[in-house]
Image 1: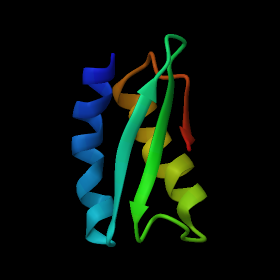
Image 2 (image 1 turned 45 degrees about the horizontal axis):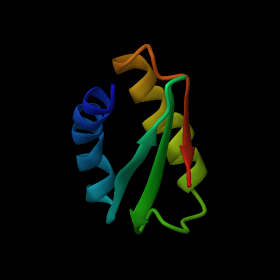
Image 3 (image 1 turned 90 degrees about the horizontal axis):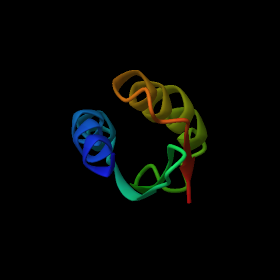
Length: 73
């Protein structure tokens, strides 16, 4: 499943990079929880939680039904 998540993040990453940010996959648990680290302009941005929930999480869950949650670490 980690490979599926990596491939999905490759599709999401350009939108984050367009705003000076990026995302790093930290881990994927057996129960589908994806841990990521926001980087660059996304790290510490007041809108980062919205980006994570409405952008990254929504897209990952649509692309990979096995994903149960996305958490920033």
